Every structure is written in C-alpha cells, then in structure tokens.
Image (cartoon, rainbow, N blue to C red):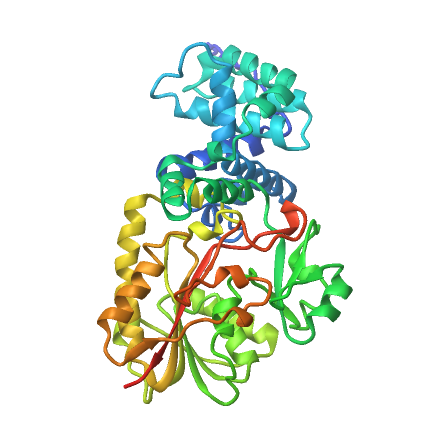
Length: 455
C-alpha cells in the first residue's frame, strides 16, 4: 500500500522591494540614531566603518541618504513646525519612528530635488511596512501630500532661522552674542558650507586653477563643486588639504617657525600639523587615538610633509626637551562647525559644554609644561561658546605663573579684523567673512588665545 503523498505548498515569490525604499528606510533609521541616541552622523555614514545598513547601499543611494540627513538636521526645526501644522492632534509620545518617517519625506519635498510623488509614495510605503507605524499610513499620506501642495506657503510662514536652532543652543548664543547676532549665526547654519583649502604655494594660482577664490587669510574657497574632493587638481600632488578658513588661523599665530621645534597636541587628522610642517618647523604630533594617528600619517604622506608622531595621553607625555611652539586645539562641543556638521546641534547639550570646558582647562595646564622659555602656546577650539573659549583662557592667564597673554593683532588676520577682541583673543563666527552671498560667506566658529612663557 502506497503512502499518500504530502501536499506540496506552492512557492509564493516575495515581491521585489520598491526602488528607493531602502534608502528612505536607512535615512529614517539613521535620523533616529542621531536624534534619539545622539550618535555622530559622520560615524554613521562612514563608508568603511559606518552603520551596516548604510554600507549595504550602493554609492548613489548612500549619497541620497546623506543629502536627506544633512537637510533634515539642518532644517529640523522648520520641518517639525510644518509637520505639526499639518496634524490636528499632536503625535503620541511613543511615535518617534513615525516622526522620523515624516521628517525624511518632508525634507525631500521641501528642500531636495526629488519628485514630490516619489517622496510621498515611498513615505507611505515605509510607514505601511513598519509594524510600529502601519496604522498611520493614511496620516503619512495626508501630511506629505499637503506639504507638497503648500510647500511655498509653508516655507514663507516658517522662515525664522531660530526655528532650526535647538533651544539649549539658541539661549547660549543669544547670551553670548545678543539676539541679533545669534539670529545671523543661525541663518548661516542653514546654508551648506563652502569647501576651504589650505595651500602649499600661491593661493591665487590654485584659486584660478580650481575656479575658486583666494580669501584674504590665504585660504582658497570653492563653492558648488561636484564629485569627490580627491578628484580635484592638485590633490594627488599634495598641493593642498581641506581645512576651514577659521581652522587654519591658530597655526598662523606662531609667526616664523623655520627650524623651530613645534608640537601639535590632539593632532589628528593633521591639518594643523601639516601647517606647522609646511612653515618649516620641526614638528611632533601627539594624539591619543591610534586610528586617527594613522590617518594623520596618511595625510602627511600625500602632502610630502614630515612629522614625528606619538600615540598617547598628553598627561603622560614627557619629551626630551620643551618646544618653541605648542598648539593645543582642544576637544570641544564643536558648535562652531554646525554648518558642516548639523548633527552637532542635536547631539550636544549645555551640560556637555560645561564639562568640556573643564577638560580644556586641564589640557591647557598640561600643555603649558611643554613650552620652552620665551616660547609660544596657542590654545584653540571650534566651539562658539565663551565658556569653552574666553573663560578658559582668562582663567589660565590669571592662575598660571610664568605665562602672559600675547594679544593677537588685527593685521595678523586680514579680512577678519573684527574677529580680534579688545583683550587680544581671536573669535570667529559663521556670520563673519561676508563674500557677497551666503553660500560664499562665513567660516567656522573658532576661538584662539596666544600666550608667551616668561619664566
């Protein structure tokens, strides 16, 4: 007697995923990581070591995800105001995933060259397929379609740049610079930053070759470039490196360095180390991170510059002799770089600013021990907050015997004379360096103070 055959279940093919859905899903997932868990956007979108879902995308989709995230963070307050205006009742407290889907869709509709229909349909599909948001797919459809219909009116209604500055930061900027200047800084934060290059050789010649502009400080500025930085003329030959115009200033405050001993503390990725070496100094670079130091060495190799490198903690570092020039570009909240790194506004807090100021004070005290008699110590960071800049420098000057402030002179920073304070500190903000159009103007927020050892 034959055994009855088992019924064969038909194979049901899984329908292919809609084109473009993966990139939107990844964008929403990474936006959640930045906003909800305060994870660095640069780390998440690193092509070699970033989030696995991001690395799984092809290069084109990776570019789209980065574009969505940058504008979603840069204009986060505006997007939230517009989304909220389209919803009759506030979203439930546990609807973070839904909010991120709406923000990703709205960012494309309002600010990117993406067809509105694609942004709407993919947002709805994304909501429908996520168990956390499936019941809200009709809401997503209604909200995104309304934003698409009324986007010009919405953008006109919600045009206050302070919307895109989180309250903790807005309050600190207003306290430091006044409401009007704080608003100007917030307005520049909305505009993508230009590409600044530090040049070995004549800035004017490279600017002409690249179709850029030579700034008064010596930086070459490019606007609206396409493609990889490494494809630009002069990169492979080591003629220049990427460095914001403000970040290039601290190393210039040492004056003539030919043949002198200099050390760059917290040195990686090496832009300031390269400046010191290019100015003829005998340079030592110190950094606590081995991986970042590898990157510094690679950068110096491309540039054809040399420096002695050490991986280790500044507190334990004991050189055989002191240095004529000591540069401490200290770890900070990085609020001066928000234009380039908009995630900073949403991943840092006022409490972190205060904590980092303490770290800077400790490092500055340790750096002072490395300065030779009559040598110079430059302390700098890319924070906009005086707690991390002026307050630390003033306390050091008041509490450290054998050092005096060596005031920065206006003629040392041509085109940025307004950045030199009456005390002799250097303080740049994104609202400085007007070049006639927002996309050509501004620079990172930076602080620098120079001290001379007298004892």
